[in-house]
Image (tube, rainbow, N blue to C red; front, side):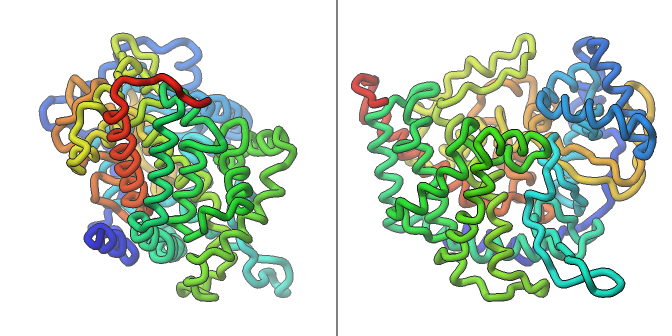
Length: 497
């Protein structure tokens, strides 16, 4: 624990090492003359081809008519169905999707995750974030006469890094989250309160239907979802798990909706519809969540003004809510659910691929649960096949040229470039021809994994700040529930719904 905590603390002051500009030129893999995806494996449909040409033209001329009329429509449609694997089959490693340029060669993605500072905008993967819903704090006055509010962005996933136009706010906000939340969470994970929550989860697992889509994973009163909310909020914020009133509010905000997640609330247009469908529930609960966080033990340790930017406690509390909504309550949850067989792995609608037929529970039943390294490899391999974060983005800080549809295309500074983690984790050039199969002994699985927005532990300062916490949580749950499975044998009778 001390070693892992020290590793997290190092990140607080870490700056991108050997920073260099992003290169979009094609690369060759170590074992083959060319990337196996340079030759498309299927013919694109007419609509797919038209969509590519529209997006190429619009992105090359961001102030043109197509960019301001047709591109927003195409982008909105494609963000709802981001089947990047299918597009790579049709167009090769480079293509356009949802108003972004997708560059999926391993070396390109590795560079942007490990050595190149990233500029950002208000995107969540292929989706568009509503900046008005994100923590934009009023800060002093602006204007020629000193009137009018000035707002500063403290949502660090949309902040530029230093070296890519940033003023240091990204690094400051990130350091606060790690210092006052992540480090303490690693300590609380192993105390008696966290252990009691885990023990209760195991008891629920024994008596509830925990098969594919079972009540253990869906019930709002007991089982996995209440555990996630209580465990994460206790570890990160120190909130007493027995405080029913607070956890009723927290569960209602994060999981108490038709999607069982709060992330859609932050998306443009979709978020408005999502909020209206729940009678503006999120608008009502958000101030209550902020109040709970401000009064939490974790926040008691935060100074009234922190970092050189003099972040207030209210700003710190407010900035953690979208992190909880978009990452902390979803990342570990998805990692664990797929590892425990609650959901089928996707096959990406690809002929000859049967990832959805993999019986992860049979594999889980066969691993050594007393060997942490083996459990970690199991979790990494499951989540290689279905990463908890499929893709992120960065913004080009200079013009770049890349081959798309057989021609070199030049895109201007400011173009959004997708970081397609879901493609690199299924890259035959890197992982071999069995890329769509489960292989617990896959070479360099952990060291080359990008599921935490890094390459193993190599990072440019954008690695998930809760990586160690989320991985520890996943290991604990998979280990303890796995042992319960073995105690139960093959008995599946008497489950509670």
